[in-house]
Length: 193
Image (cartoon, rainbow, N blue to C red; front, top):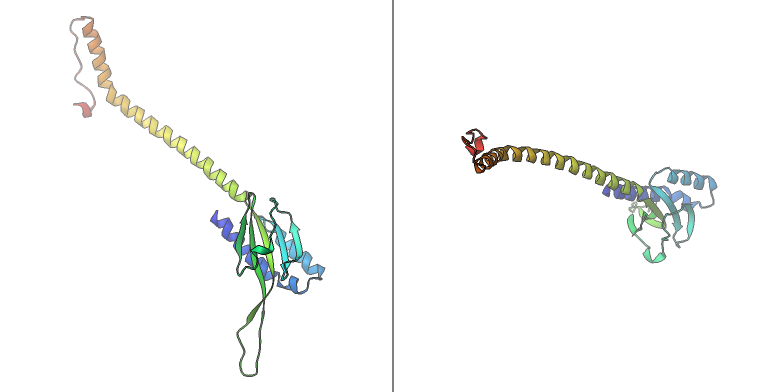
């Protein structure tokens, strides 16, 4: 499960990095169309919402399976993280930052990050549920096969150990009926000799 979870964090972070231009130029329909196609190309991504710095939705694509919506109480965030674990999907949020270099005549200051919005990504839990179901089915099959094997080995061992007792029981039954010349055989497994 952690693989899909960590993959969703990385996807959310990448979407945030690639959404900078869309937030800087919100009226460019070609950029919005290209961004939407990119977002829909990931199989686990079912919903993406791009928010500006005032938490207003700029771009929405897809529909989440659960009815949960991102609220402003959960913002701001400083890094990509899980904000809601829904029944059918995980909801991740990441900040969208742009970098501005402030140059002075003497020296250049380190780049300063400017927060321009947030991205909300809902990732499906379906693939994880499918993996869990496959693991459970495999575990059950392996357990049944191993239990049948162990039962077979145990029955064979018990039968081998019980054989002299069965023979002795037959001898005792014959002796009880007063049959003459009743003798117990002197063979048997090495464990009993």
